[in-house]
Length: 328
Image 1 (tube, rainbow, N blue to C red):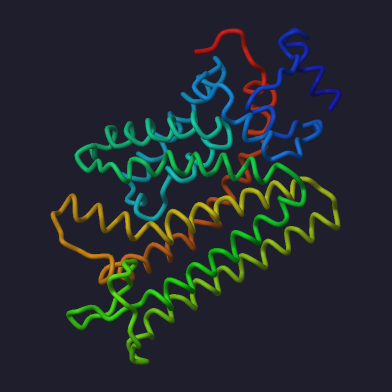
Image 2 (cartoon, rainbow, N blue to C red; image 1 turned 90 degrees about the vertical axis):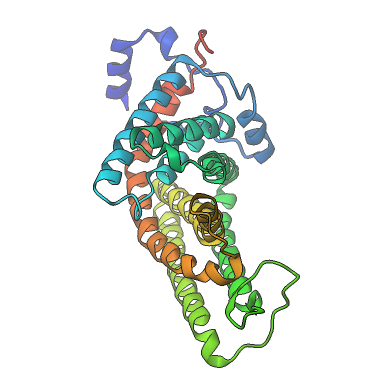
Protein backbone atom coordinates (compact mmCIF):
# COMPACT_ATOMS: atom_id res chain seq x y z
CA UNK A 1 0.00 0.00 0.00
CA UNK A 2 3.06 2.30 -0.04
CA UNK A 3 2.26 3.55 -3.54
CA UNK A 4 -1.31 4.38 -2.52
CA UNK A 5 -0.09 6.48 0.42
CA UNK A 6 2.45 8.21 -1.82
CA UNK A 7 -0.25 9.22 -4.32
CA UNK A 8 -2.71 10.36 -1.66
CA UNK A 9 -0.05 12.38 0.19
CA UNK A 10 0.83 14.06 -3.07
CA UNK A 11 -2.77 15.26 -3.43
CA UNK A 12 -3.69 16.03 0.17
CA UNK A 13 -1.80 17.40 3.11
CA UNK A 14 -1.01 15.17 6.06
CA UNK A 15 -3.49 17.13 8.14
CA UNK A 16 -6.27 16.43 5.66
CA UNK A 17 -5.43 12.74 5.59
CA UNK A 18 -5.45 12.36 9.38
CA UNK A 19 -8.33 10.03 10.30
CA UNK A 20 -10.96 11.31 12.67
CA UNK A 21 -13.37 8.85 14.19
CA UNK A 22 -17.06 9.44 13.52
CA UNK A 23 -20.24 7.44 13.00
CA UNK A 24 -19.24 5.71 9.80
CA UNK A 25 -15.58 5.37 10.77
CA UNK A 26 -16.57 3.19 13.72
CA UNK A 27 -18.36 0.80 11.41
CA UNK A 28 -16.34 0.51 8.17
CA UNK A 29 -13.14 -1.53 7.95
CA UNK A 30 -10.18 0.45 6.64
CA UNK A 31 -8.08 -0.75 3.74
CA UNK A 32 -5.22 -1.27 6.17
CA UNK A 33 -7.29 -3.54 8.40
CA UNK A 34 -8.10 -1.20 11.28
CA UNK A 35 -9.21 -2.92 14.42
CA UNK A 36 -13.00 -3.30 14.53
CA UNK A 37 -15.19 -2.62 17.48
CA UNK A 38 -16.41 -5.85 19.03
CA UNK A 39 -19.17 -4.16 20.94
CA UNK A 40 -22.55 -4.03 19.25
CA UNK A 41 -23.85 -1.40 21.69
CA UNK A 42 -20.86 0.81 20.88
CA UNK A 43 -21.67 0.54 17.19
CA UNK A 44 -25.31 1.39 17.79
CA UNK A 45 -24.42 4.43 19.91
CA UNK A 46 -22.10 5.57 17.16
CA UNK A 47 -24.90 5.24 14.60
CA UNK A 48 -27.13 7.62 16.52
CA UNK A 49 -24.44 10.13 17.45
CA UNK A 50 -25.42 13.46 15.84
CA UNK A 51 -27.78 11.66 13.44
CA UNK A 52 -28.92 14.82 11.64
CA UNK A 53 -25.49 16.32 11.11
CA UNK A 54 -24.16 16.00 7.53
CA UNK A 55 -20.51 16.63 6.77
CA UNK A 56 -19.59 18.31 3.50
CA UNK A 57 -18.38 15.02 2.07
CA UNK A 58 -21.53 13.21 3.22
CA UNK A 59 -23.62 15.83 1.42
CA UNK A 60 -21.52 15.39 -1.72
CA UNK A 61 -21.80 11.61 -1.66
CA UNK A 62 -25.53 11.84 -0.89
CA UNK A 63 -26.00 13.99 -3.98
CA UNK A 64 -24.00 11.51 -6.05
CA UNK A 65 -26.05 8.58 -4.75
CA UNK A 66 -29.35 10.34 -5.48
CA UNK A 67 -28.17 11.20 -9.00
CA UNK A 68 -27.15 7.61 -9.70
CA UNK A 69 -30.44 6.36 -8.28
CA UNK A 70 -32.51 8.74 -10.42
CA UNK A 71 -30.63 7.77 -13.57
CA UNK A 72 -30.92 4.06 -12.81
CA UNK A 73 -34.60 4.13 -11.84
CA UNK A 74 -35.50 6.26 -14.89
CA UNK A 75 -33.70 3.87 -17.26
CA UNK A 76 -35.37 0.85 -15.67
CA UNK A 77 -38.78 2.57 -15.85
CA UNK A 78 -38.63 3.50 -19.53
CA UNK A 79 -37.14 0.11 -20.46
CA UNK A 80 -40.04 -1.63 -18.73
CA UNK A 81 -37.78 -3.36 -16.21
CA UNK A 82 -38.88 -1.48 -13.09
CA UNK A 83 -41.44 -4.18 -12.23
CA UNK A 84 -38.69 -6.78 -12.09
CA UNK A 85 -35.72 -4.87 -10.68
CA UNK A 86 -36.31 -2.43 -7.83
CA UNK A 87 -33.44 0.06 -7.84
CA UNK A 88 -34.63 1.59 -4.57
CA UNK A 89 -33.87 -1.63 -2.67
CA UNK A 90 -30.27 -1.67 -3.87
CA UNK A 91 -29.66 2.02 -3.21
CA UNK A 92 -31.45 2.11 0.15
CA UNK A 93 -29.17 -0.66 1.39
CA UNK A 94 -26.25 1.53 0.32
CA UNK A 95 -27.75 4.58 2.06
CA UNK A 96 -28.02 2.65 5.32
CA UNK A 97 -24.48 1.26 5.13
CA UNK A 98 -22.84 4.56 4.16
CA UNK A 99 -24.85 7.14 6.12
CA UNK A 100 -26.36 5.21 9.01
CA UNK A 101 -30.02 4.66 9.96
CA UNK A 102 -31.32 8.23 10.30
CA UNK A 103 -29.52 10.01 7.48
CA UNK A 104 -29.82 6.93 5.28
CA UNK A 105 -33.58 6.73 5.87
CA UNK A 106 -33.99 10.44 5.15
CA UNK A 107 -32.03 10.13 1.91
CA UNK A 108 -34.02 7.07 0.84
CA UNK A 109 -37.36 8.85 1.26
CA UNK A 110 -36.15 11.97 -0.58
CA UNK A 111 -34.70 9.91 -3.44
CA UNK A 112 -37.93 7.92 -3.84
CA UNK A 113 -40.07 11.07 -4.07
CA UNK A 114 -37.70 12.61 -6.63
CA UNK A 115 -37.87 9.40 -8.66
CA UNK A 116 -41.67 9.57 -8.77
CA UNK A 117 -41.49 13.20 -9.88
CA UNK A 118 -38.92 12.49 -12.59
CA UNK A 119 -40.86 9.58 -14.10
CA UNK A 120 -44.25 11.32 -13.86
CA UNK A 121 -45.67 8.91 -11.29
CA UNK A 122 -46.09 11.29 -8.37
CA UNK A 123 -49.86 10.80 -8.67
CA UNK A 124 -49.32 7.19 -7.61
CA UNK A 125 -47.71 8.24 -4.32
CA UNK A 126 -48.88 6.23 -1.31
CA UNK A 127 -47.70 6.75 2.24
CA UNK A 128 -47.00 3.10 3.12
CA UNK A 129 -44.77 2.66 0.10
CA UNK A 130 -43.13 5.99 0.92
CA UNK A 131 -42.00 4.63 4.28
CA UNK A 132 -40.40 1.54 2.74
CA UNK A 133 -37.12 3.17 1.52
CA UNK A 134 -36.54 4.68 4.95
CA UNK A 135 -37.26 1.37 6.69
CA UNK A 136 -34.89 -0.52 4.35
CA UNK A 137 -32.08 1.98 4.98
CA UNK A 138 -32.72 1.90 8.75
CA UNK A 139 -32.74 -1.91 8.94
CA UNK A 140 -29.66 -2.13 6.71
CA UNK A 141 -27.71 0.17 9.02
CA UNK A 142 -28.70 -1.79 12.14
CA UNK A 143 -27.96 -5.09 10.42
CA UNK A 144 -24.58 -3.77 9.29
CA UNK A 145 -23.72 -2.67 12.84
CA UNK A 146 -24.71 -6.05 14.25
CA UNK A 147 -22.79 -7.87 11.52
CA UNK A 148 -19.66 -5.82 12.17
CA UNK A 149 -19.74 -6.32 15.93
CA UNK A 150 -17.62 -9.51 15.84
CA UNK A 151 -16.43 -12.31 13.57
CA UNK A 152 -18.74 -14.73 15.37
CA UNK A 153 -21.70 -12.46 14.62
CA UNK A 154 -20.72 -12.37 10.95
CA UNK A 155 -20.86 -16.15 10.78
CA UNK A 156 -23.95 -16.71 12.94
CA UNK A 157 -26.26 -13.95 11.66
CA UNK A 158 -26.71 -15.30 8.10
CA UNK A 159 -27.82 -18.66 9.53
CA UNK A 160 -30.27 -16.90 11.85
CA UNK A 161 -31.71 -14.92 8.93
CA UNK A 162 -32.21 -17.95 6.69
CA UNK A 163 -33.62 -20.26 9.39
CA UNK A 164 -35.95 -17.47 10.58
CA UNK A 165 -37.17 -16.96 7.02
CA UNK A 166 -37.84 -20.70 6.70
CA UNK A 167 -39.76 -20.76 10.00
CA UNK A 168 -41.88 -17.73 9.08
CA UNK A 169 -42.75 -19.07 5.63
CA UNK A 170 -43.65 -22.49 7.05
CA UNK A 171 -45.87 -20.85 9.68
CA UNK A 172 -47.69 -18.60 7.19
CA UNK A 173 -48.30 -21.27 4.55
CA UNK A 174 -49.26 -24.06 6.94
CA UNK A 175 -50.91 -22.35 9.92
CA UNK A 176 -52.55 -19.29 8.40
CA UNK A 177 -54.28 -20.92 5.42
CA UNK A 178 -58.02 -20.63 6.06
CA UNK A 179 -61.34 -21.36 4.43
CA UNK A 180 -63.17 -18.06 3.99
CA UNK A 181 -66.88 -17.54 4.74
CA UNK A 182 -67.65 -17.52 0.99
CA UNK A 183 -66.03 -20.93 0.56
CA UNK A 184 -62.78 -19.70 -0.99
CA UNK A 185 -59.38 -20.46 0.44
CA UNK A 186 -56.79 -17.85 1.39
CA UNK A 187 -54.23 -16.70 3.92
CA UNK A 188 -55.42 -14.70 6.91
CA UNK A 189 -53.48 -12.87 9.61
CA UNK A 190 -56.61 -12.16 11.63
CA UNK A 191 -57.45 -14.28 14.65
CA UNK A 192 -61.15 -13.77 13.95
CA UNK A 193 -60.90 -16.32 11.13
CA UNK A 194 -59.86 -19.66 12.56
CA UNK A 195 -57.86 -22.03 10.36
CA UNK A 196 -59.91 -25.02 9.19
CA UNK A 197 -58.80 -28.38 7.78
CA UNK A 198 -58.48 -28.15 4.00
CA UNK A 199 -58.82 -30.72 1.26
CA UNK A 200 -55.61 -32.09 -0.18
CA UNK A 201 -56.33 -30.53 -3.58
CA UNK A 202 -56.92 -27.15 -1.96
CA UNK A 203 -53.55 -27.25 -0.21
CA UNK A 204 -51.52 -27.94 -3.35
CA UNK A 205 -50.92 -24.31 -4.48
CA UNK A 206 -49.80 -23.32 -0.99
CA UNK A 207 -47.61 -26.38 -0.51
CA UNK A 208 -45.96 -25.93 -3.91
CA UNK A 209 -45.24 -22.27 -3.11
CA UNK A 210 -43.85 -23.22 0.29
CA UNK A 211 -41.66 -25.99 -1.15
CA UNK A 212 -40.25 -23.58 -3.75
CA UNK A 213 -39.32 -21.03 -1.09
CA UNK A 214 -37.78 -23.64 1.20
CA UNK A 215 -35.68 -25.05 -1.66
CA UNK A 216 -34.45 -21.57 -2.53
CA UNK A 217 -33.58 -20.81 1.09
CA UNK A 218 -31.84 -24.18 1.33
CA UNK A 219 -29.59 -23.25 -1.59
CA UNK A 220 -29.00 -19.90 0.11
CA UNK A 221 -27.91 -21.81 3.19
CA UNK A 222 -25.48 -23.85 1.07
CA UNK A 223 -24.11 -20.60 -0.35
CA UNK A 224 -23.50 -19.24 3.16
CA UNK A 225 -21.74 -22.45 4.22
CA UNK A 226 -19.56 -22.33 1.09
CA UNK A 227 -18.55 -18.70 1.67
CA UNK A 228 -17.69 -19.42 5.31
CA UNK A 229 -15.65 -22.46 4.25
CA UNK A 230 -13.67 -20.33 1.79
CA UNK A 231 -13.05 -17.79 4.55
CA UNK A 232 -11.88 -20.43 7.05
CA UNK A 233 -9.45 -21.89 4.51
CA UNK A 234 -8.06 -18.64 3.10
CA UNK A 235 -8.59 -16.18 6.01
CA UNK A 236 -9.37 -13.63 3.29
CA UNK A 237 -11.64 -10.89 4.76
CA UNK A 238 -13.21 -10.36 1.33
CA UNK A 239 -15.26 -13.51 1.87
CA UNK A 240 -16.78 -11.93 4.97
CA UNK A 241 -17.68 -8.93 2.83
CA UNK A 242 -19.42 -11.26 0.36
CA UNK A 243 -21.21 -12.88 3.27
CA UNK A 244 -22.31 -9.46 4.52
CA UNK A 245 -23.72 -8.43 1.14
CA UNK A 246 -25.49 -11.73 0.49
CA UNK A 247 -27.01 -11.94 3.96
CA UNK A 248 -28.18 -8.32 4.09
CA UNK A 249 -29.80 -8.57 0.64
CA UNK A 250 -31.53 -11.82 1.65
CA UNK A 251 -32.67 -10.28 4.94
CA UNK A 252 -34.20 -7.21 3.25
CA UNK A 253 -35.86 -9.25 0.50
CA UNK A 254 -37.41 -11.73 2.91
CA UNK A 255 -38.73 -9.06 5.28
CA UNK A 256 -39.80 -6.45 2.74
CA UNK A 257 -40.76 -8.52 -0.32
CA UNK A 258 -41.74 -12.00 0.87
CA UNK A 259 -43.61 -11.17 4.07
CA UNK A 260 -44.87 -7.60 3.75
CA UNK A 261 -44.72 -7.18 -0.04
CA UNK A 262 -48.17 -8.68 -0.75
CA UNK A 263 -49.71 -6.79 2.19
CA UNK A 264 -48.36 -3.44 0.99
CA UNK A 265 -49.46 -4.11 -2.58
CA UNK A 266 -53.01 -5.01 -1.52
CA UNK A 267 -53.23 -1.80 0.55
CA UNK A 268 -51.86 0.19 -2.39
CA UNK A 269 -54.35 -1.21 -4.90
CA UNK A 270 -57.23 -0.68 -2.49
CA UNK A 271 -56.17 2.97 -2.19
CA UNK A 272 -55.33 3.73 -5.84
CA UNK A 273 -58.01 1.68 -7.63
CA UNK A 274 -60.63 1.81 -4.89
CA UNK A 275 -60.60 -1.96 -4.56
CA UNK A 276 -61.99 -3.90 -1.66
CA UNK A 277 -59.47 -6.72 -1.59
CA UNK A 278 -58.72 -8.62 1.60
CA UNK A 279 -55.43 -10.18 2.60
CA UNK A 280 -57.09 -13.57 2.90
CA UNK A 281 -58.11 -14.02 -0.74
CA UNK A 282 -55.34 -12.02 -2.47
CA UNK A 283 -52.19 -12.62 -0.43
CA UNK A 284 -51.07 -15.76 -2.27
CA UNK A 285 -52.06 -14.29 -5.65
CA UNK A 286 -49.50 -11.51 -5.28
CA UNK A 287 -47.02 -13.38 -3.08
CA UNK A 288 -46.03 -15.92 -5.74
CA UNK A 289 -44.86 -13.42 -8.43
CA UNK A 290 -43.16 -11.28 -5.78
CA UNK A 291 -41.22 -14.25 -4.42
CA UNK A 292 -40.27 -15.48 -7.90
CA UNK A 293 -38.96 -12.05 -8.91
CA UNK A 294 -36.99 -11.70 -5.69
CA UNK A 295 -35.37 -15.08 -6.32
CA UNK A 296 -33.95 -13.55 -9.50
CA UNK A 297 -33.08 -10.26 -7.83
CA UNK A 298 -31.14 -11.57 -4.82
CA UNK A 299 -28.19 -12.96 -6.84
CA UNK A 300 -28.11 -9.88 -9.09
CA UNK A 301 -28.19 -7.43 -6.17
CA UNK A 302 -25.51 -9.45 -4.40
CA UNK A 303 -23.18 -9.35 -7.42
CA UNK A 304 -23.70 -5.61 -7.96
CA UNK A 305 -23.19 -4.69 -4.30
CA UNK A 306 -20.17 -6.97 -4.00
CA UNK A 307 -18.60 -5.24 -7.00
CA UNK A 308 -19.04 -1.71 -5.65
CA UNK A 309 -18.52 -2.45 -1.94
CA UNK A 310 -14.70 -1.95 -2.06
CA UNK A 311 -15.25 1.52 -3.55
CA UNK A 312 -17.80 2.36 -0.86
CA UNK A 313 -15.41 1.03 1.76
CA UNK A 314 -12.61 3.25 0.48
CA UNK A 315 -14.83 6.35 0.29
CA UNK A 316 -16.13 5.84 3.81
CA UNK A 317 -12.67 5.40 5.30
CA UNK A 318 -10.89 8.18 3.46
CA UNK A 319 -13.61 10.81 3.27
CA UNK A 320 -16.82 10.18 5.22
CA UNK A 321 -14.72 8.82 8.08
CA UNK A 322 -13.09 12.23 8.50
CA UNK A 323 -15.16 14.71 10.47
CA UNK A 324 -14.80 17.98 8.60
CA UNK A 325 -15.05 21.25 10.44
CA UNK A 326 -17.89 22.39 8.18
CA UNK A 327 -21.12 20.41 8.56
CA UNK A 328 -24.83 21.06 8.31
